[in-house]
Length: 333
Ligand SMILES: NC(=O)C1=CN([C@@H]2O[C@H](COP(=O)(O)OP(=O)(O)OC[C@H]3O[C@@H](n4cnc5c(N)ncnc54)[C@H](O)[C@@H]3O)[C@@H](O)[C@H]2O)C=CC1
Ligand SMILES: NCC(=O)COP(=O)(O)O
Image (cartoon, rainbow, N blue to C red; front, side):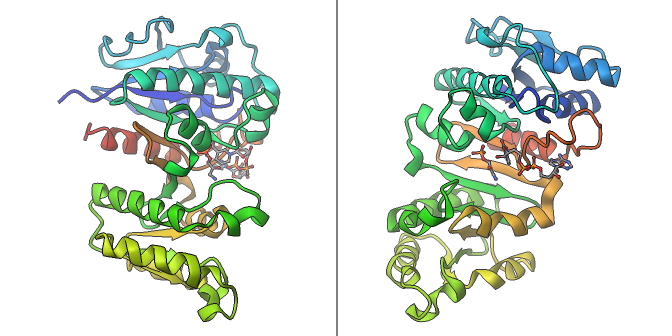
């Protein structure tokens, strides 16, 4: 079977994305794959020059939405019209970098609306630069949820590594808003999407652990009411529908238990409950997957790391893992 084309957005043109794409795609050969880089040529050219690499891509006509479908395996560059000639300032956070990220994502979303069987891998963007460029989204997840028509409530952010996998009930709201966003429907939706994902990965022999929102999962209501009133009924309904899940469990010990292999995934209630343990264990192997979109989207787990751009010190492991996962989820291997 021929592998599906993958789009790889470079993310913020001044961030780590272009450098990692240059290094990874010249170090590793992906036979049989059609990879369409999306972003400005200047970002790639700057790093190739610095790393003494020849251009490793073939330009494609970005106005032809089927150009990548008809291409032979290889690495291609699709530059959205507004990014042609965009100057780059690698390592500096600017609105131009945000424009590059936003336009590239907009362009990729348009192609994926036409080719839902393709996959999308995203390079890191700066949320501040993205918004400074006029794209009012807290991140890729919300952007793609809206552009695909699914809506923010229909998707679930999931990040995983070789041992730990973590889904999030809420994505990027301020902490003060989290309790009101932990609803029965959100917990149920995220459990259902996470269950589908762990089954796809072949690790559904163990249950999903659901974290409590409050310390000690509320200690029976003593330390907060949400775990008994919202989380527990949603978990019970998911179990009745065939999902293997347990909880709410005290979040302070659930990662320790998962690291020993007890759970297939963890459903955390908010960003900084779920992601610090994951990144501590798997920083250079973390893959972000948006569950619930009509197409496969994976991403690096890390951010733009402006401090590392051009130093050659950044690890390419997370991007490599994101590409591998996209190939796997689009049925390529
Ligand atoms: N996938 C995405 O688009 C993501 C974007 N972000 C955004 O990125 C921007 C910067 O965020 P930070 O919190 O500073 O996180 P960051 O991940 O960019 O950097 C945190 C620390 O990790 C290091 N680091 C990052 N990537 C690395 C790599 N590949 N190899 C070795 N070390 C690496 C950095 O040098 C820094 O010390 C923010 O605007 C944030 O919102 C953050 C996470 C994911
Ligand atoms: N910490 C994960 C993260 O911020 C990724 O966000 P997104 O851009 O993938 O929505």
